[in-house]
Image (cartoon, helix red, strand yellow):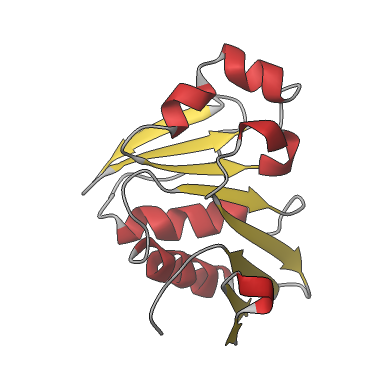
Length: 151
């Protein structure tokens, strides 16, 4: 389902499995440009890392993608650099600034930020927001805001 509420593009996908979530992330990767920031939001187990795996695959990254909860930032190289950031353990925008986050996400790579709602002041205005909601044992509702595309 695709529509444009209030001028913001929205893509909504109901994913029935982790494999579908990965495939949807791969599709979204094809719509991204260098410098894109993906602000992921959703509870534990909602599929944020699966979605990030799909984006990585779409960028030609063959390394194993894991949640950077303890490392905070993982960098991968494909057709473009990918920065996978997990801010769950940070205290907010100030901590993000202290680790050099704003400089990292303002570069030419693509940045994926898990738990992005914890650093609202650090996100660029043009960040693509992706919300992930658990709707069943394997089912997730994924909504993508702020991404322009031609269906």
